[in-house]
Structure formats: structure tokens, C-alpha cells
Length: 379
Image (cartoon, rainbow, N blue to C red; front, top):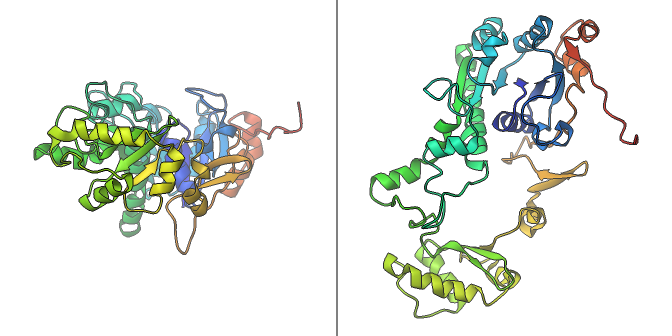
């Protein structure tokens, strides 16, 4: 599968990374000069792994023609501009699908391609807040807590874009026609909330955050501090798992867990018990049991956890520790590909590989830029 990625930030690059991890030939079309939000240099940004970068001047008609030549040879295009920007560049769906009627054109935005907020700027926190996902997250009596950008950008955004692209590719095998995928973070986030909104509709979820079964309201689904200032996570929802936890904690005469009025007292008993030992001591005690209790592992330490290490969940690739491709395949395993590179490092190589002619002339004209990899031994 060949994918053209019009470079952006956040969910678009993550979707392209995922497709590259799974074996797609992804060409990332970068700007000739940096622009927008730059948190990491691209050659240090793991979200840019697995694909070749070409630097194209999209203000130059010859540069736009280069992208359209790539589109003609592609199965998928991914872009994450505000609505209307790709059209103004001459790379909108109508133009691209005219050049390649089988193209799957994936559009990644926060608000979507239409609606009152569609033209407005926003970021993950804004999208998840409007979609209804931010308000329920947090402790009782406290403010909403931001779940980093996992829920919006990557779960509600990237994953839904990839699902849409793959579904459209399957459909195109039958119909011979491409289509446009409007992947909006607000839509995906709302879809992720399906179970919780269902609970709410039937009266099984309170509007007050931090008082429900899965939001830290229940003392048997929460986190507890240990004697060394670290934490243990408790997910003993089912009665048999709860019984195992209580047995291992060596507690008796506990309040009724099925009575929410008793939850404050039950939480106090559990908190006092967990505070008596270190995280390592509790982790050793609960490991391999059905108590559904596990240590809260710091992000920096997660690659060293014995279970993740045994599975190879994290890998060190050319000196950078990063998550391995997921999910796992029995017959066609995914693997890490190219390391992130500077924009334009593969311009000549990628264009030639896709059958684009006259590359030297395009470089000379400035329509595209070939950037040489810096010498790591220099200065």
C-alpha cells in the first residue's frame, strides 16, 4: 500500500506512523521550511519513523504537480489541515480523486469538515472537552483532569482515521472507487464514550465526577499510595477478584463494598493497609494472582517491567527507546523501519522509487529540496 502523507502534527503523523509500522510505503511530504508547532526536531520525533521524507514547495505550482504525481500512484492520502486549506493548495479531494479515482483521501481534523466550529483552531483538550469526555475525568470535588492527548488526538483521532482508511481500501477493492474519510476527533471521542454514555442513560452513571464505578469513585477501582511514596492500582471489580485482594491484604470486617454509603470507610481501610508496605513489596505479593492489583509504573521505567520486556513491548532502535509496532501478527509480523529523518532527506530517493521523472530539474528549480543527512561526527 502506498500512502502520501501531507505533514502535520499530532494525530495525522501518528496515523501515518501506524500505517508505516504495518508495512505501508509512506512518503511524507514536508515543507521546505519549518512551520507550525515544532516540539521536537523531526529527526528526533519518533512519530516520523518508518517513512521517507520529501521536501516540497507547495506554493510552487511545480511542487504541487509533484504531489499530484505521487497521488496518481498512491492508494491513500492523509492530510490534517483546517477545512479548505488543502483545496487552496490545489490538493483537495476533487483534484486528487480526478487524478486517481481509486484514492482513499483521509482528512484528520479536530472539529470535522463541517459544523459551526469547523474553521476554528483547537487542540486535543478542546475537542475532548466539547465531546463530553473531559468533564467526567477527575476526583470528586476537583476539576476535570486532562488525560494527556491520548483520548483525543490518538484514540479519537488517529485510530479512527486508520480504521476509516483501511475500511475504505477494502471497499475500493470491490467498487473500484475511492472516497473521502472525514475523521474528526470530536466524533471519535464521542464514539469512545459509548459505554459510559450508555451507563448514564440507564441511570448507572452519576453526573458528578469521581463518584462512579470506573472514575475513582469506587474504592475497589482506584490507586493507593505505598509507604515509599509510590502507588498501586486496584481494579478488583468482580467479587471473586475482590475476595482475592482482600485475602492477600489480610483484611477482615470490611464495610460492604456493594453499599456506596460505605465506600469512604472502605477506602480509608484500604489506604491505611497499602501505606504499610513499599510498592515493590506489594507488587511481589500480588504478581501472578487474580486480585487485579498492579504497581503504577513510572513511564520511564515501563520498558524495564519484566512482562513488557518479555513481550518486547518497547524496543531500543538505533539508540532510541520506543514502543514496538502493535498489534501482533502471526504470519506477517510488523517491524520498525526507517528512523526519523530531517525533512527532505529522501526527496530524490522517494520520487525515483515512485517513478517520478525529472527529479534533478525539480531540485534545481526549487520545487523540491534534497537535504543531505548531517554528519554525526561533525561538531
